[in-house]
Image (cartoon, rainbow, N blue to C red; front, top):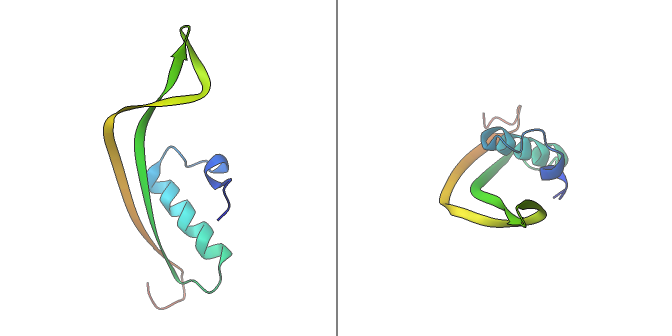
Length: 81
């Protein structure tokens, strides 16, 4: 899978829409697939503060909250709709 999808997707902060984006990407890239199941987990992360400033690329897990999105995407015209 294209590892840049999460970096380039305009939907990364909307887990339901991002799951659809990932599924559409997979079905568009692999013609032999007719259906995709995509699970997205959203966890709380905060930037680590160093000397009162947020670090550019260091994070810590801020609590145990987890949001899970489970999506099934079916390609049109497959008879599975």
